[in-house]
Length: 121
Image 1 (tube, rainbow, N blue to C red):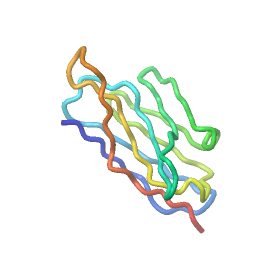
Image 2: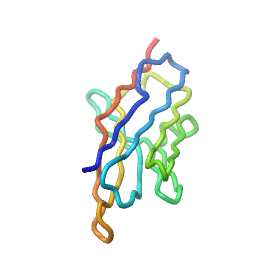
Image 3: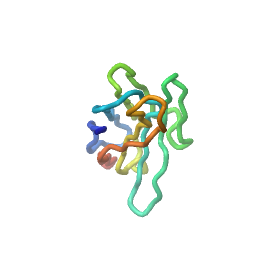
């Protein structure tokens, strides 16, 4: 069984920073993409950032220059450093990972439970 456990959400004032972490554990053979999505009330879920096992990164236009994604392959952990936070960044942030539990099988997506990020004065 594969689990993704997130931490680091909370309440922060506009202009502040938060760092999210997401650790994958369980019967994992290998991990390819890891990343973060977010969903605000009344809005569709959107990709925030993703990073593959080689370190190639994609960001949503709305967070470029403010957010930074990184990963520790040995620890199977992905991080999201969020700086210059704005009220419109308020959302539930969920991490995901593409995982193989058995060699040479298909990749499956696993998700964390979600963590609330609220940016408000």
